[in-house]
Amino acid sequence: MSPVAVAVTGTVILLALRVPVALSMFLVGFVGVRMLNGLNAATGLLASESFTIASNPELIVVPLLILMGNVASITGMSRRLYEAAYALIGQIRGGLAIATLIGCGGFAALSGSSVASALTMGKVSLAEMDRFRYDPKLSTGVVAAGGTLGILIPPSTGFVIYAVLAEESIGRLFLAGVIPDILLLLMFMATVYLLCTLRPGMGPRGPSTTLAEKSRAIVAALPIIILTLLTIGGIYGGFFSPSEAAGVGAGAVIAYGLVTGTLTLRELWGATRDSIVTSSAVMLILIAAHIFNPFLALSHIPELVSNAIGAMDLGRIGTLLVILMIYMALGTFLEGFAMLVLTLPIFVPIVSGLGIDLIWFGVLVVLTLEMGLISPPVGINVFIVKSVAPRVPLADIFRGVFPFWLAMLVTLLILVAVPALSLYLPTTMMQ
Image 1 (cartoon, rainbow, N blue to C red):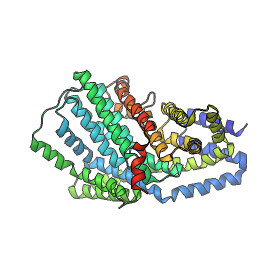
Image 2 (cartoon, one colour):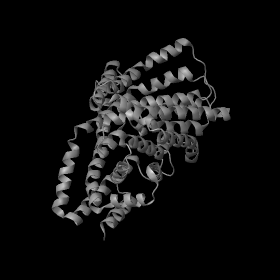
Image 3 (cartoon, rainbow, N blue to C red):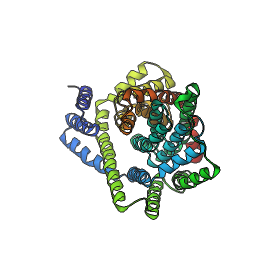
Image 4 (spheres, helix red, strand yellow):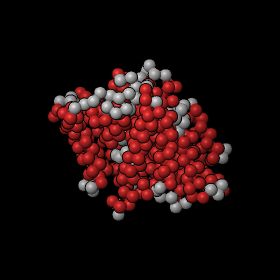
């Protein structure tokens, strides 16, 4: 059997059997290298790559970001940010849904996780939107879509994984995600406004709040605002590296929780344990990818794919759009991190050969991965929201997220047409 047949057949069969992606790549990569270069090469690769990835100091940002998000959720920071946004704009039509989007964006800035954002904000906001008779399709769609801000807004675990696999700067990727994420948030807010304008019953007005109530809500939300400015502002101001910013953020949110009494030692231990489990899964995927990638190189699969795409003679932008469409298709049945580790070794050489900036490409890829989180039939964020709102039919949630999926598609096309939106900050702030 040819190396290509080994890679394709082995990966497809294992994924079809629902073998975890990391284990699938371990098996296919190890067996493939064993077939092509011998047992010594395969075992040597297993030992060396495991140590190299596990000892990479840049990856400390992953467990620290996850820990920061877990503790922030426990201390109620995300709820207070949501309540502040609600106090300011809840009285306008669709205001509660827009406040939910703002809350998702703020919590995503701490957690860097789409799933965590959708789960946390779903628990916080869905009951409120039900109380004010929001259309369930809109309320669940807002939470599922708002959660997708988690992987794009810095600090983002998605950017960290991309940076490691593509050998790019984590700091530059964090900077590159700022303007696109603001644009995506504005597109989501415009979508809510348009839906509620066309169908006023979808998002009724909330109760008006006094100036004193607005002030109290804003003061209560100051800790999460200060923490976000501390971590993200520290990176952009050059005071912290991404790893140091994650450490400062995690330490600050733990200190806040302990001082205010919103975090017990038992809860801290639980958040730490959950962070270790999640981080271990991410590390396992990365190690597996670095065993699978040498096999891809030996089997010449990237070269074959590059030649096939090159034969289409689509040009720079045409090739980029084809790659993004492949990611959209894969997103309907594969998890985001799995797509990154499986495809970047193939696509990065292609886009580099075309002169496409890998920072810009990273923003486009990560945004496309986010579209997969609300795409049927997998749509992880949709199922997360379903677990929080069990009475809403799954079909209604998918209908609710569709307008936001279209908003993401429009945002993606804008970013493709205007690369400067992604490259302005990393170009001007990191010379």
